[in-house]
Length: 180
Image (cartoon, rainbow, N blue to C red):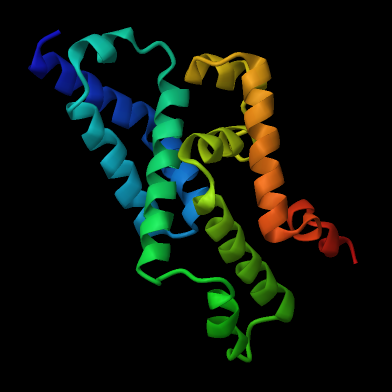
């Protein structure tokens, strides 16, 4: 495939799957501008993909969502390293606002805590966790996307869940406290 043809194909992919890529990033980041940046980065990365790999791709939606998740997690890690995202940061910022209901502040704090915990996972573990629990992919779909067995997907999900539970606590991760 020529470079020009590959560029045209990337434009078609961006038109067809751009919203899905954006939503994958937005669900992790909660920020429209950052999600737009991630979406742009994902499609820019395709320009450096070899023609052979580009032509061999069989499941574009999953691949692009996986790239979006991975890129968003990388951004979360950078923010955390620079001190832009810290545990309980959101509660400190919003707790002083009289117009915010307490539960909304608490939810924002929990999202920040979740993002911090997710960014601490290995990239592949975080991708698989997000594909399963945020994007709703089946074990089989994730296995095909990452060239794994369904058992390996299960082990990875269990490891990610255990790590997140240890970091966040079972109660917060399961959403149990919302029932009250």
